[in-house]
Amino acid sequence: MNTAFIKRIRNIPTLPSILTQIIQTLDDPDSSAADLEGIVRNDQSLTTKLLAVANSAYYGFRHQITTVRRAVVAIGFNEVRNICLGLSLMGFLHPSTFQDQEAAELLWLHSLGVSRACQLLAEATKVSEVGQAFTAGLLHDIGKVILAAFMPDQVEEIKRLIEEEGLTYAQAEADLDISHEAVGRALAQHWDLPPVIVEVLGRHHNPTPTLAYYPVVCMVNVADVIVRRLGIGFSGDPSQPELDPQVISGMGSGSKLLQEVSIRLHNSRAEVESYWRQLIADPNK
Image 1 (tube, one colour):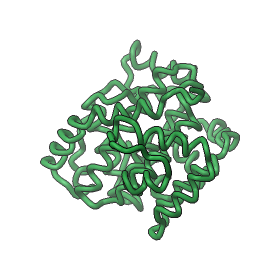
Image 2 (cartoon, rainbow, N blue to C red):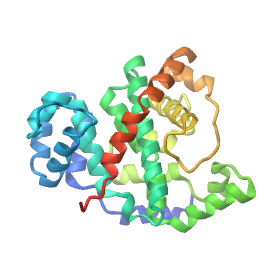
Image 3 (cartoon, rainbow, N blue to C red):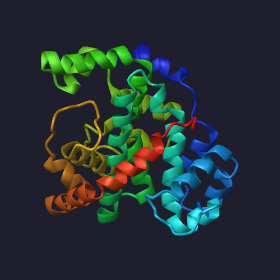
Image 4 (cartoon, one colour):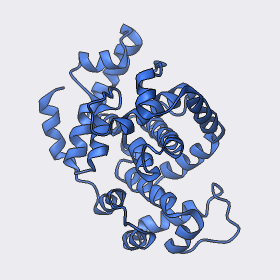
């Protein structure tokens, strides 16, 4: 990876304070709904968007939710935290600011699909806390998001190499001396994200048993493959990868569970897309 570009990561804006605080609750086993409420209520814009999502058809509550506390009671602490994380991240890197808005929107849909798949896998295997699983899945391709935001011409060249030269995504990146995993890892370190997230961003395509958070990285790898097979969003890579038996084993599950998760994710696809539409809604409207 071009070290000059990695150094440019330092010039990328730091995460908004509220987004950092929300992510930090993942590393705090004692974090509570009250803590989250204290963070969110200080941001009027986020509060307004959260309540809009909570009152949307996606949840279908009969009574209007008018406070963050009520949203936590109705939806649950982890779910509200996930919504706030998604809204904050989308506000920070909204597709409307990208050169190719449609590609950015589909990349976010892919990431939301992976976050949902990670939740389902975490619930079944206990490899990860469900909130952490959601965050790992949502952020796993943040390197691609940053490349699309800051190096759109190179991203277009990757696309050309895949379509016209027949290269794989990994080969196209290597040809241009680019690595979205290296970018993701450097960015996670720059943003001081939890170590498990740093490792996921940097190794989700290449999990090895020596990794400190190997089972979690395996989970994200498997979730990514499942989502790409189902065609939820588009990561920029048109290939259909195979599930690695060693990675499945590293997550502590079998093929039967993966089939069940795939079916559950397929059945909840409309919900994932509804949530995605809420997140990518024009922030100025």
